[in-house]
Image 1 (cartoon, rainbow, N blue to C red):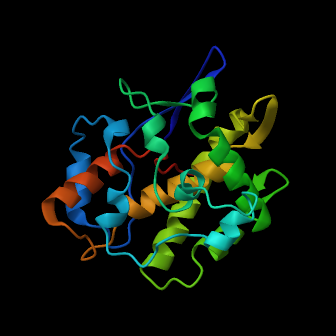
Image 2 (image 1 turned 180 degrees about the horizontal axis):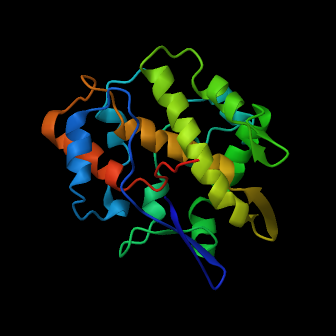
Length: 233
């Protein structure tokens, strides 16, 4: 169960070892993660979730789709958040927690939250401030075959349940777009996108892990650092 603390208006997600997605996920990764080795999550390299797994998923959105939410311009810093896990970089080095209502966090990925809100709204994954799980599965698992289709859909189900709990308490984030221009954006889209990238990445199916022992170790660490462990409904 996700453990939540509300302290002086600061909302913190505290890490637990995830239960993992049970579809031929590497047993070596699960075994290493279960050892609960001490990890400083923010120091992990998000790119390894892509390079350590032979996956057909290069991105969940096209460049043209992304430009529609960024004044028709390419912005590598924003666009990275639809295909590479980055959320762990904002965690606290001492306890691996993520404080969603802090000003530092708004600065760290506030613009990304607004960008993903736009993307999800255009795709009708976000409707009337709520995530639409079935639409998320249709969009994010489009053109995928198994095991990838099931892996993405299962990740969406697990992520949606946890994120709903989180955003019921902290639904939005206040973002400074530029000098004297601020905006309030929903957190659910950026959290769901990053949650899916994390779970699909470290749950690389048996036989698809590239890079041998270093990659198995890296995926196990991301498993341990899962900010959105599965919860029972």
